[in-house]
Length: 212
Image 1 (cartoon, rainbow, N blue to C red):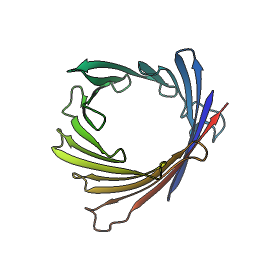
Image 2 (image 1 turned 120 degrees about the vertical axis):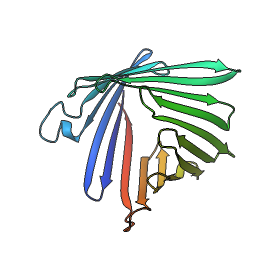
Image 3 (image 1 turned 45 degrees about the vertical axis):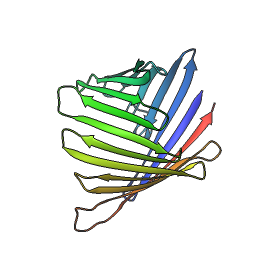
Image 4 (image 1 turned 135 degrees about the vertical axis):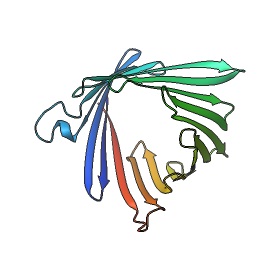
């Protein structure tokens, strides 16, 4: 069994969540809860359960909303290139998402995402330079807009990331670290360049993993 504890801090609020995972042969059982589950005494608020077979499917159940979410994964080969496909359906809001990623080689891949019944479609190209720097331009067909992401891995465990959304003119900066010994953390700041008062929004997250 494995357990994970996550905290999130913002200037005006804080939140926490915990996840417990247990292996059962080829399957994995997962239970997740938030501070709403325990803060006012034991309750079902914020509680979700999941059954998954890694690489094949995941079934999530939101206990308080009595809502299921199904996710199925498969990989086929196109022109001798792996195409990773994902089908996601949320029963409560009757929303279905199709996602596919074609891996051209170790440094290039192309992704597409579409929400059935809508004009919400996105295309993304990913290029990894030197194994350390990643460039990800993406195009939203519904909004007719571009988004850009660039990340750089330094010192092995640290990743610096910058994002820019052209429609909202939102600029984001992030520093994250993942370590098996010291856990993981993420510090991020975002600012809307379209606002007259460009006040950054700050957020910090920490994650600890435990073997049980």
